[in-house]
Image (cartoon, rainbow, N blue to C red):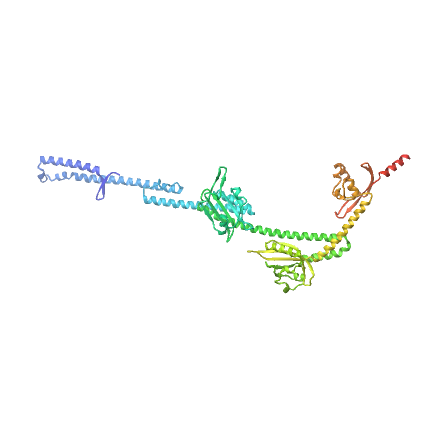
Length: 594
């Protein structure tokens, strides 16, 4: 704006005023001087020509006119400049606001010239940037948690869960190394999963609670964040070499007040607060997921254990049934014994004696079946040591001590013990111990007892019968071996089931056991063996046949007939072969003479 000064707050231009004043003053002086020389001297001039005063005041009138003209010009000019300045200022402020929104604002470059306004805009930018960063970090954290929860929901095994989690976490938070330590059954922190850890130092690592930073983090239950890492703590290796990390972060895996393990991370750059917050939340989610997977695994183990016991009981039932059937088939007069054992078997399945023990082995609860089995009253057994009911022999005592140690450590055990009832009679009892777990470990022991005394007695009788049957079988084999014939019994598929010594020696074996289970396919061509097997199948279908045929330089008389093999419940071939070489030779010579 042009230089101006103010008269009663009215602005006007100095240059114009000075020029007009000079010209008007000079004109006035010259005019008055001319009049004074021609009309009258200046002192008397006013009397003779009063209007000369107007001429003398000409500079004043000119100044007033210029004042009006220059003031309006100055005002219009100033209004225009102020409008342009205001528009420029508003545009400048608008541009700065747009830069603040887009994040391109620079406090040193983007200024309006108004200090107070520039300070306010800078503070607005800082708050806007802080809010935008917080929102971006919050969105980043929520996306990370969603990704981790998706990983956790897709794994049902702890090892696979930890592998996928630590790999994703390292990449998401821009760390370089990491590992997940989980508390195992031995109360050691075991490295369950790792990412980029130095193999020599970490792949088989276990840590005791309280040992090192990992053990300290586990015991204290609080995160540990180090930005000054000892040189010998850990190396981050790559194809270009190895280097020490700039920071170490250890976060406990906690569910409520229980610590399940520790996450350890190492990075070249310190973690920012929003990343630390995400890692804490991810660790909490991982701990909850591990706890859930463990509960699921424990439930599955209990279910598998229950199914395994059910299968064992079914197998035991099947074995018992087979034993019964074998007794029935072996000797008809054992029918009564078979029926008795079936009744006993039903009683074992439906009536089972049970008891509940404390950790000291004392009886807390029992049922009537146990009292009936041992012929005691409830007052006799409540609070009494279960071990005291056992027969006091070394094997019984040692077996019980071994079983009890296993039960106290949380494992189930099942053994057969001998007991004496109230009348000093000995009983064989199959006893199963099953620990009941509580919050602090094993709290009680449940005992299932089945009285197998009668079964034991029957097994003894059966063993005696089997010995007698084995002696009979050996006698029959000796009789077959004394017969000067080849005697064999084949299954439907052509395999030898019973042979005597003559047949086994013919095939090059020292005893029949070497030939049992083999067939003609093991000694002859496949075509010949297949033809003979087909012929034997026809004999089974049509009936007995006999024929004379040469074999290996000898003449054999063979008789084959269908025969039911009872143990296999299938039809086979019973064969008899006699060497008639001499008889056929004599018959031929007699024929030739005739």
